[in-house]
Length: 134
Image (cartoon, rainbow, N blue to C red):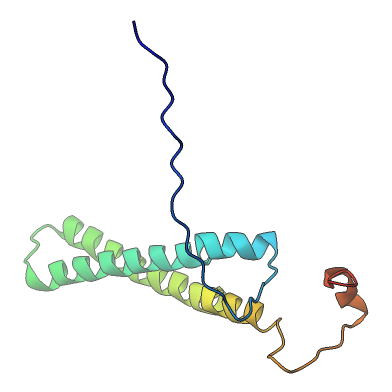
């Protein structure tokens, strides 16, 4: 016969040190998802890198081997040309539209005024202001 004895609960030792101050940053759901996923434009960069790598491989193959069939040579040439063009277009598009995660973090950090400086709230800032007495 088995006895149903419960083992004593395990309570880990907790050590806490005092911190001088704590800064809390409020972020929106959009900013949180951007931080979690990285920049949404990074997909453009990934495709650009893949296409430029493919084009470079085909270019090296064109330069280092002898392709006797004209049709095969034209196929290699077209893959090289189209891959370079698309890769450069996607890279340029990424460069113009990318949102850096570092820029987002900097923008979030700049919302908090430096220590010792006071900041007055404008009319649009009152909805994010803490309640009185806090």
